[in-house]
Image (cartoon, rainbow, N blue to C red; front, side, top):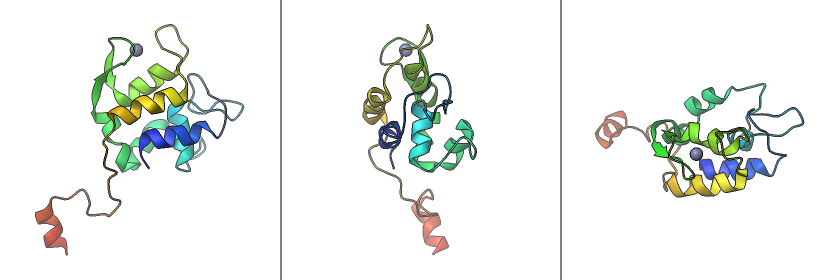
Length: 128
Ligand SMILES: [Zn+2]
């Protein structure tokens, strides 16, 4: 599942949280929503662990972009809470808005989940 799709899906599962992956009343921030969509929960994950294990979202840690609403530059995984949260230097956008923005910057091909999908072709050939 793409990160944008996961944020949209998780956003339907409860209210928005500010500054917390998972809010006290079952809500979630944009990143927390993405985690809920793939079956994570506060009890099982912390936010950074998921991005180590969710291979197809790894780009969000590696790709540095400018915030679409101000000049801040940061990895996408940091821009998402920056867009989500309601603090003074953040933008308090909806998770749906954030998902729409993520959809414009994420890789368009979903990575295969095959264990050899990340290997160069030559290495795959030697494995087979
Ligand atoms: Zn910004």
